[in-house]
Image (tube, rainbow, N blue to C red; front, top):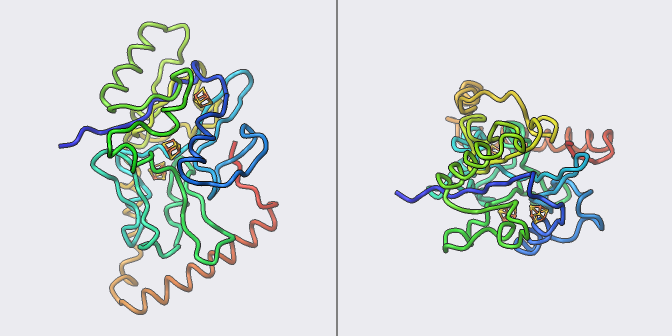
Amino acid sequence: MAKQLGLLFDVTMCVGCGACYEACKAQNELPKTNDEPLKDHLSSETYTVVEQYGDVYTRKMCMHCTDPTCVSVCPVGAFEKTALGPVLYDADKCIGCRYCMQACPHRIPRYEWSSMNPRVRKCSMCYERVKEGLPTACAEVCPTGATQFGELDELIAIAKKRIEDNPDTYYPHIYGLEEAGGTNVLVLSPVPFEQLGYTANLPNKPLPTYTMAALDKIPSVVGIGGVFLAGMFWLTKRKNEIAQEEQKTNGNNSHEK
Ligand code: SF4
Ligand code: SF4
Ligand code: SF4
């Protein structure tokens, strides 16, 4: 069986240069969205951000959960947890219901609201690169090693050793080791993670356990083929309308610091 791959992000080593942000944009051919990279936010055109909290910097991106909620809630299998670890999205299967966006415990997936043919967008852990043995674009350019790519087991061992060897430097927890069943992106920090905008108090159990219970309400529609598709079309259309109304009300900003 293939070894799981992952990323280790160490807040204590990050200098906030934004090279990872720029490399991600280049790798994914995403347009420039902000003159000041550190003031950008996750969007359909920005898959990772570097955020400043006081005198430290942290990154936000898809955590590539071990047992992802986005996979479990998607009624058409548009999300997939690959054997190597990255969680991928297939726009050809997506029907735009956006359950994934509502269910993600890390509030990551974004939607192409302004597109006529909208897709959900998020980091793919550079799947096309890592399956060929290359590091992710963000890890490759990081000048300090704050973003490190590798085999998940090795990254966990590195993270544990850093905390063990430097108890005064690190908050004694590896974010992602257990949260919602664990993730393939791990984070080390000098301060509690809620101070850096991470979702705190997540159960250690994978969230799909809960979301499957919610989805049990759907199958009465799923089995009816055309009726299901018509229903989903209506639901999607209605959700678009609601979201657009919300966007107008909220000033079209989804930054979630
Ligand atoms: S962080 Fe959200 S989008 Fe990424 S794998 Fe986990 S549930 Fe899916
Ligand atoms: S792993 Fe690739 S897609 Fe994900 S943030 Fe890094 S550069 Fe972007
Ligand atoms: S490239 Fe490395 S040091 Fe620069 S902002 Fe990204 S993680 Fe931090």
